[in-house]
Image (tube, rainbow over all chains, first blue to last red; front, top):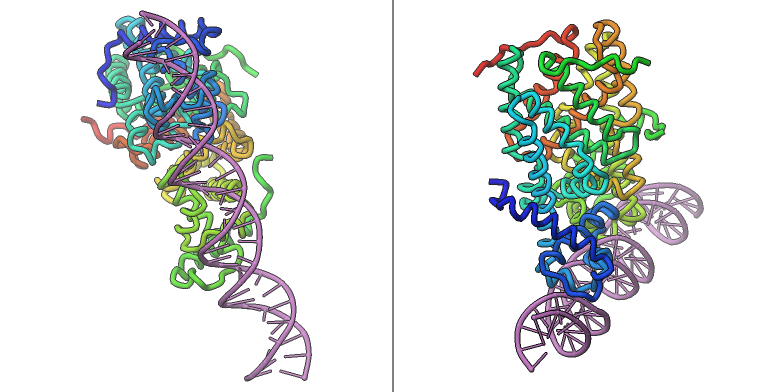
Length: 236
Length: 236
DNA sequence: TACCATTTGTTGAACATTCATTCAGTATGG
DNA sequence: CCATACTGAATGAATGTTCAACAAATGGTA
């Protein structure tokens, strides 16, 4: 329900489009580009602005400037500021979704591998970087008061959560753990989101590597039989 | 460093002031009130507005209306909108800080009890309710682009984190666990923040009780010798 | 107590700025 | 030369801030 049914075709085609948008950096200005390329270009500029200035300071002018185009351009391709932002969120959501689905597929059939792949995917550089994390957080901050965002913003949505629960259930059986799968899945996914939040704040020494380490540690203690602890690496 | 050194006196006195501000609901309008009461009243109205409308839609007019006062009043008590928001954030931070310190003190000397008390404090109704969570998240969304917020927003700040690390270190020794205390502390505190985020979104069935359950489950698996699992409560 | 002066808190209209949106006009590719 | 993409100045609405006027408290004086 949360996820619009959109063939994966667009997801991959979009990458190609964006690529071409990047390549023709010199041609952007003044030259005509296909509607789709322009829209992606504007969405990228929106993410830039969100990351740099925050939601409340993101203006149409800044987006247009960021894309190297004129002021009226956004209202031409998107009807309004609101629709631009929704399209941006949708774009990020699609990208995120495609990313973890891909990781899951590559992981093979072993549930333990699948869970680990999902966790690792969350801290992949293509997904988990300051720019995108900042943009996500900008939307989260507004989500509560905007139903449209609320539906989209829970990136780790019902489907994602269900997969987590299923994996936890399977592991529980094969490892004879005592916990409630739903509870453990909640703890795990919440921790992933929390780590994102900390990475975004970026004040401390928390890095992508540290975050992944913490997440892996969680897996080790929660599913010791499936993820034998690699502890003892560094002991101060 | 993050926390302004402010005697606890104000923290408790403030509660009393706010109480009196609530009681004299009828007298608010037209009657004079002490400077501190007015400021608290405006801060509360700001939190209301943040929770209801989100950061970007929170206006001076809305705050003034919410407090039942005139338009110019905020600029009289606080110099500007920015300063009002900073004062609001500072207020929430002080409240949060006082709350967990209090919980920690009440917990006694046992590290396991202390850690559990800290976790439970995070989901106390006085701290963890939709209104305040929404306000926190509104600030988080803007924190990256505003240094002032960034410094304050890491509510679970360096001090808090240090305490977590210390407790994890102690438990590790007394329980002969294998993990790195810093890593485990990061996982734990990130999970708490993530649970807050989910509670704020409030889309799903995640409640304060569920969140606390998940956090407790984490403690059980991470420190099995200190928190013997209470599993088996409900088995579907 | 009565009276006035001064300080302090409050109001609301006026002002200036910022910003999303519109649209008539321009340029470009086919 | 038509259709489509694009421009950028004009417009109007929203909003933070200022300020002159007003009211309530305070304090001093007789």
